[in-house]
Amino acid sequence: MKLNPAGFASALGITSAILYFVCGILAAVTPQFLLYIFKTWFHGMNLDALVPADGHIFNLTLFIIGLITFTATGWGSGWLVAIIYNLWQKKSPEKGE
Image (tube, rainbow, N blue to C red):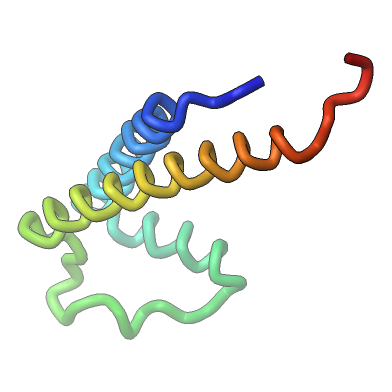
């Protein structure tokens, strides 16, 4: 099976944008819960020093920049994965054919 690099990249880019948007909503609405989740992902590391003095971790300008760059990174990663996958498929014969 061959992957369409642009299609796979677009799917991963859109998925990245959705996940980033959900994360941004959590940062705006429930920052302490978001930090708790991050703490579990970082093996219990204390992230309290990253919280500004006012307790708000959401910034609209940074959110927009992050959304654009995270989506672009997701798209680029998807494209690269599809290219590498297709190259790998050419080099490794499938069994049973």
